[in-house]
Length: 188
Image (cartoon, rainbow, N blue to C red; front, side, top):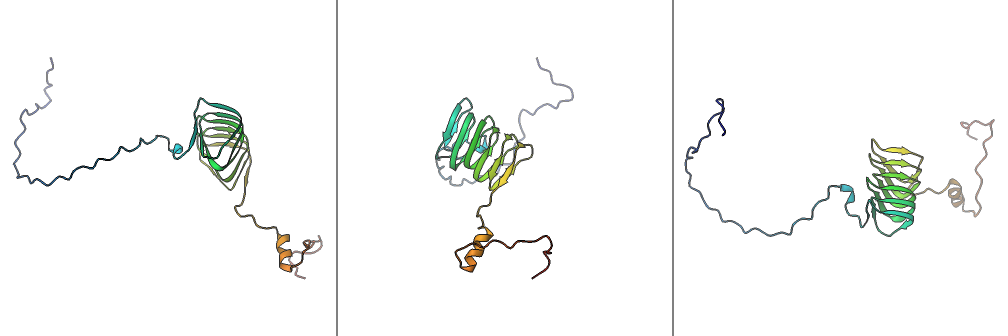
């Protein structure tokens, strides 16, 4: 049987009555019944992705599509999602050349990535290969071994074409040759 310790205070069996105040009943509005909200996923990188490849799936060959793709499995070969987003989950493993609008990498990748917009390497990723994109984000802790080639969004016309258009001639003039004896600071 339980015995109270001498330093414990005995619990009051009857709490002291509180002074009563007159209670005013306010009209209670009827509660609206709402449909339950969809369960939120604990993984924020899966939001709004149309296609999903689970971690037990392995693809060998060419993978192409016309929608965004979340990949948590393994792909060996090529991945073509020209106008769409590819997210490689934390369990994802790719041994492929990738071509997409945007790539977010959480898992492991070996191969070259070519994007028309951006590549994002998350802290858990391991990437070996070259990246060609307009923008790149590499989080602290990500492993990347390869080369990066940043492309401009609006490519500027070469100087020769602009000079030919300004002169109004159909031929393209060669740029003036600079001799080793002439100073670049001299103005002729």
